[in-house]
Image 1: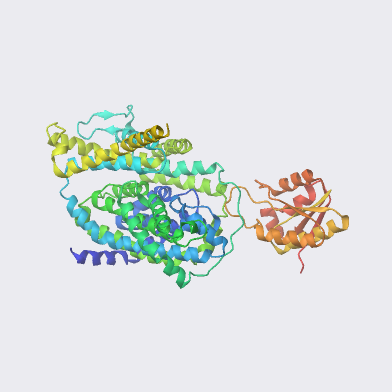
Image 2: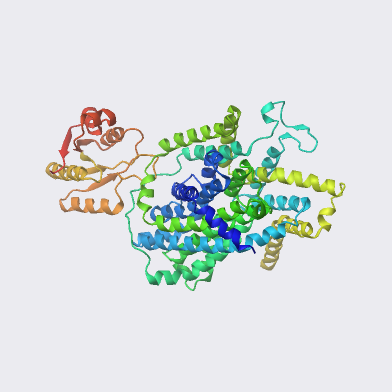
Length: 502
Length: 131
């Protein structure tokens, strides 16, 4: 492995401009982590236009900072107010709030910050060594492999993600359909443009992301579901004791591993890994009844895991060019706008970007560790801003941003249309994540699929006979068949049980 | 009949609460405390937490006055909530705290105290913070 490029990456990060953007990124990330409702995907989408005028590496450093910074911020409200600011901090509420009620809020927040730092750092180190290996492996990938991989990614996101599987598939299908709008790259035929000149080039990624994540979420949050306000929590600055650190060190270690592994999986990401880490810790504990009553492991494990996962979910993006979750999909879009196509060539063609982004995470994690505890008071203060003040400002920023990307009023209309769609989707229980992911992967899937069919002279059996794509097809079959098989098994088991009863 | 106290956790609010207790003890009535959060925000600095409310209730208990807490959220104007609760409990007196506000500040921000004094159709007792 060539270490000089790794060192080179640090010199990129330590440029004052990049340091500043890293700082802004993690600060904004923590902020949106604190604010319930506004998630990292929405924030990255809203801030996309800002990144247009800066260097690609600087832009991605900031957007990545928002993503992993949000995992830190979500903890604060979970522990102090029993309000998860972020979906990935939902499980932290159980033990974090119980600890705060016992007057141990400082310990809980401290251990979460330490765990997040350790989890993030372990994940970056693993990423540093693992990513070039995957990228080299992926250099052997041809169009057939990419076609199957993209399909696998879409299916995994639809099936692993939270909520109804059918609804996720519907959303993904809609995303694929939207990806076909515009001129066909192979034959030049126009599809679904309805003779509109603006649609000839296809629908841009930015208005879709800004509408579905940005505007959609803002509209959804305007419905007052938050219930009543709470009194400001008492501030505690006590750090965790030596015993508490010792008690949670095992949980932090296991959380790092779980988070790293689940983060790589498409559809995994921070939410799933925090739940998995909490469940594992509870199962493993000799006293599972302590969980929910203020067990410090119950805070350490999920908080470590969600940061580890946020970091490791960059691996499929930076090495294969396949986004693993919704936020990464928006960052993928940011890279495309900058004229950089993420994929196995990224590490050799743009080593400064690859290592700059990876190494910026070291710096970002240190910044977060330093800032997280002292700034808690300020973040809690921000929660006093009412939605009726926050929402109009964010909508304005979103729409101005959408306009500046291409100076096109049509884009503003698109943002509004997709904002309404995003609102309705959330209202009826459809996650917009699979739609955006399928849209991003859709164009990749289509071009790879058609290229490979040209390659195979129209014979689809080629997908199975090539070794790598064959294995991927097998994985695809398993992903599709597993839920059906499991349903069949439980039904049979139930029947067996019923017969015994009779 | 009850004495209604509009309360926020500040020295002025405490002064109003104490004056409200005095008045309730004198009249032999009970106290209803309005502590109204602003609807829509997650955290409201003017809201009293349970422990603090408990302490105030106990202080009233020692004087033989029972306290009922009302935490109706308000939208644009807290005065509406004061009026509504006053009607609701048929308040004989509304107690509020006053603080100085410069003419410019009053022009820009308005004055809740002034609007309660003028618009709530009950007798109002205005209390200043101890110097």
